[in-house]
Image 1 (cartoon, rainbow, N blue to C red):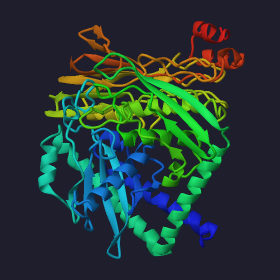
Image 2 (image 1 turned 90 degrees about the vertical axis):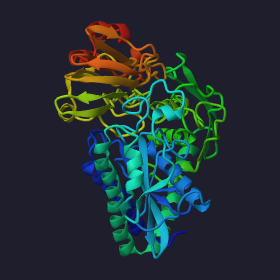
Image 3 (image 1 turned 135 degrees about the vertical axis):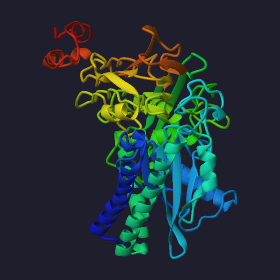
Length: 562
């Protein structure tokens, strides 16, 4: 039993959370790229000095990075112990984006800084930021048809970017020599490092106030309680096995769907997630590295029980055997650009599909489940410089036992939001001709799915190349317990007034565009929950009044409301 009183434990828990939240704010407020500064595609956290286990993560950070940064920090610790990485000194900051060393895709660049107290490492602070470009075959890094990781961009093992607080000019030169818009990266790099410095200052204040030993005791107790709380939730599920599945449209190279086949075994207070029946490794970039696969399971379970604190303890009752021989356990040189943004969401969808049968009051129908990755890279003649635009977008959430799904919500894997239209038009040579709810896209059900997003972007000047790595273009997000699927994702590129639809529906790269050409995207709606005929007729009529469905759509899907 802990010697800490409940109030002190709660204050320290809040203090650790506050450290991470301040890192999040410092990162976003000082970053240069809209994808970080406006869309918040980043995360910050505190990790154990012994094994890299998660201690706390910012509430405003992407949930998919919860397990990933834990794995990445553990890898750095192991590589230092094995002599494969230079030992740390005060002020050092390691940079790493290698997917196979506890990562996601190459664009998610992780920084890790050891925090010293009394000459020893007390913990690690780490953060991840989505860089708008990391080199590779296409601007933005989202190569839809890469067949090896080298085609996706610059891959960095853990190396010291900052040594004793000073930026290493040689390593920085190597990085900037291999990426586009290199002159603009220094703003994001300094912002990412500054966030860690802010975190260290705030952590020292907490340690100075309560003492190192007390905080260490609190961290251990918080981890134990998170594990106990998760076990208590799991114990409410009847023992047995529950199956679910999800599908990736294609890998971008072979135009056939990939299957995520999941069996969840519940025994006592433990859940075991077996993905061994899933599709084998694929040729294109839809492979998922193990760290991302694990993190996708963790975030899916947190969607079901969000009250469990973010801590390594919350993951202890979740057992995920390595899915060897499947596309969910990628090894070098398999391409992985779609793993975090798309495949992870299909993994979460499979978890929802399985567990909605076990805890229907806690699990939703499938959400849109796509980050809507759209990159546009080219030259702006008016400003005399190159640019790389990266647009992510939301979609509809699935309906649930209590209410309809949220419309235009963020992706399943995080809290990132679409950058404001005004910011994007100011930063890039584009015009948003439309940005609206995608009416009619929500899946029918007793509680309907939320609606996706419909937007249209015109290139105003210069020339550019467009690339897409999205999903749910072949299959709309499925409904639950008799609900209907949401509308699938759509992509159309208008070139000289002629419509072009990608062969792989939501995946293609290097589409040439010139001034006046346009891109149209419709993001998926969420799946419906329960049978459509069970929906309150007044609710259907209200949807029609608000323009969410036409009268004809309402009659076809719900049998009423016209």
